[in-house]
Length: 425
Image 1 (cartoon, one colour):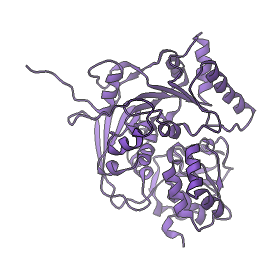
Image 2 (cartoon, one colour; image 1 turned 135 degrees about the vertical axis):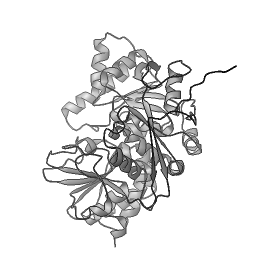
Image 3 (cartoon, one colour; image 1 turned 30 degrees about the vertical axis):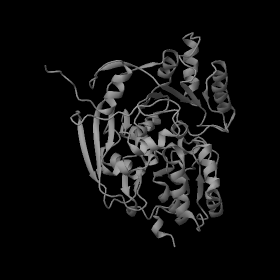
Image 4 (cartoon, one colour; image 1 turned 120 degrees about the horizontal axis):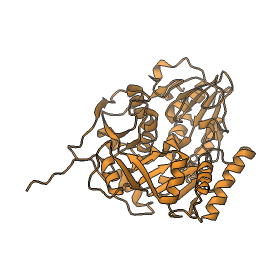
């Protein structure tokens, strides 16, 4: 007897499992059960107002809603204090176990994987576009609007149109100072900021298989910068090693079928690729670092949900050790969580940064969104390990932001211009 069986991608399999169907197809509208709903101090207040406006009395599950004040926290002014206070009061009212106050909080997309709150096989939505980060663990995660989060806090479900999948295959060997950030910048430079519009971006190949979890999370973090609905990497031994010691719940590894359908397949040979820089004012405006040696900078930022993990801190410290930040450059280093902060102290990285003339901060998203802790004046230029460089993203509309990996950001802070670690004497 012939049994019809549709071949599915990892994204389709996870969504099918969460909507109670044996199979789903791209374009299909589904209602999926959620494993986690999250919001921050900018987006949660709108969700909370909508939740109350719907006359909802209780949340679907007080252990599955994460509220993390990280954008304007520690509070930068009265308005941000009021927003953070809304999160605090709502969390208290509904006895939310995943509310993270300053002192415990971190940058949300680094904190949740680190704490084992997001696990492989999950379906996660967050009122923040970089929720797609968790695809690095083999989860389906995507950013949504605050009203969708309000509905999800009540029902524990969300509707999706099943996305078409694109496959990105990376071959070759990465050179020194080349990391996950360079891989995703190179990819966005190739396909453009709308090259994966409402598509699942599946990253695979020998380079990805060797990449540590930090690099995988960085790649999936920036799927949204190519218009992607989600970014995802099949979980493997590296994933298992990372999640087994921290997972707060059971998890499941999904893999794409060999004959699954993809709307587009792209292959890249990364052998000999230089570190990549996204120039103003779009993440797709990517050039190799060697072409930008004459660009002077005023500020260098190492941190954010893209590159604020311990591996990023180590990379920047390795480059800057024994050197001094250029006298007319502000270097700001922000570990993404308290645990990373403590590890930086333990490994002596804080001493390296401060001895070099950098500022070292408590976890916050501050500079990335032009919030606080590193705003640019008109005419100023920054190099940053963040994820966006739109006009006015980090301050004045007349400022410029260049995106890079941590090694390049650190070397540039010393040189006073965009440059490479090899140039440091």
